[in-house]
Image 1 (cartoon, helix red, strand yellow):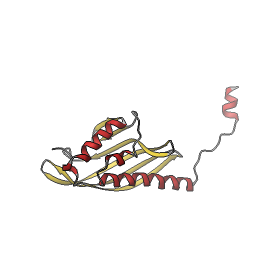
Image 2: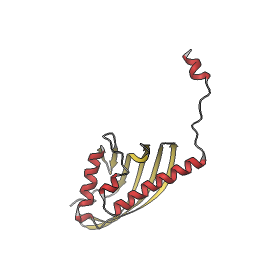
Image 3: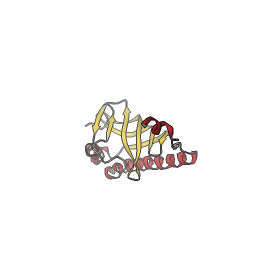
Image 4: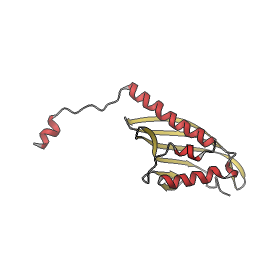
Length: 157
C-alpha cells in the first residue's frame, strides 16, 4: 500500500517559471549588492545582515574554515574596525546566480580588493567567491560561503 500511495499519486510540479526565477535572481542580487556597499562602508553590522544568524553557518575564507555567525561577525568586525583597513574597497561583479529552487540559489562572483594593506604597503588582489543563498524566515541570507585570493598576507600587520 505505501508504494501505491507514493507512486500512485501525481506529484505536484515544483518547476519554477522563468518569471519566478527572474524575480529570485533580482532579490538575491540585491542582497549581495547591499553587502558590497556595507563592505565598502566598513560597516560590519550591515554586512552581517545578509549572513545566516546560526551556529550552522559555515564559510571558507582563503583556506580558513569559519563556523557560526558569531565567529564570522568577530572576524568581519576585526577586519573592518581596524583603522589600518579603512582604505580598502571592494569591486565585485556577480558572474552567475543559479536558482536551485524557490528558496535556494547559488551565487558565483569575482572582483578586486583594492588598496588592501599588507606588510609591504598596499596591493590590489583579485578574488573569487561562491555563496549558497537560502530564503529563511522570508529573507535571503548566505548559509554557506567561500572566498579566495592569492596573497596570504592580506589584512595582516
